[in-house]
Amino acid sequence: LDVAVHYRTANHAGGDYYDFLPLPDGKLDVLVADASGHGTPAAVMMAITHTLAHSTPEPPTKPGAFLGYLNDHLARRYTQVSGNFVTAFYGVVDVHERRMVYANAGHPPGLVLRADGSTEWLPATGAPLGVPQGAIKEGYVNFRPGDGLVLFTDGVTEAGSGPDTFFELAGIEAAARERRAQSAAEIGEGILEAAAQH
Image (tube, rainbow, N blue to C red; front, top):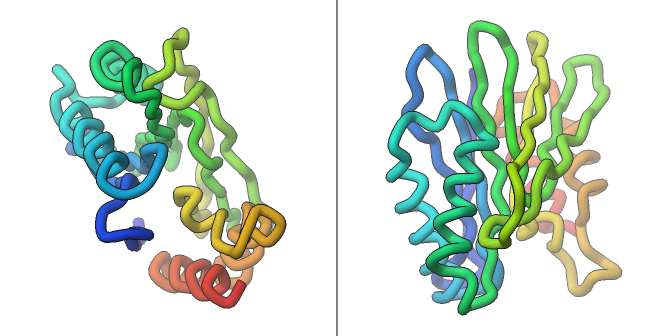
């Protein structure tokens, strides 16, 4: 696997977050989340989410149950009074099987880049965290050699001067497709450069 990340806050403190949690059996997981709002309140909510993510009683190998755990604790203790919420995408990749099981709680969809040039969006499977809801469903995706996955927050899709000029999912898809044969870092750089030019 070739993995690259980029993090930049809109203010001095932000509510965007990514993490890799330790899993057994050679599996790789990734959590990408975004707290509602900006600045210190969003950063505090994400610090709480980070703490909860690292306090699960067993390794978080089941994405739906893991996001459900986060949701239960956030909704019961933190978001009812504040009205805040957290969107999150959590995926567990089985490196040997080239398969990922994922859950998406109201987060922007993940983009699967296929080596043949096609793309696939991985839509939400549940509501944002911190909102009372039933079980968060899971989805599955199989990877072939040369395929890739792009995860992001709305800080990228909402680049622009207003809703009518946002970079949006189409901008990410076009920039990622243009560099799909390059390294993970180069694909990420291409998306960021395209968003900045936009």
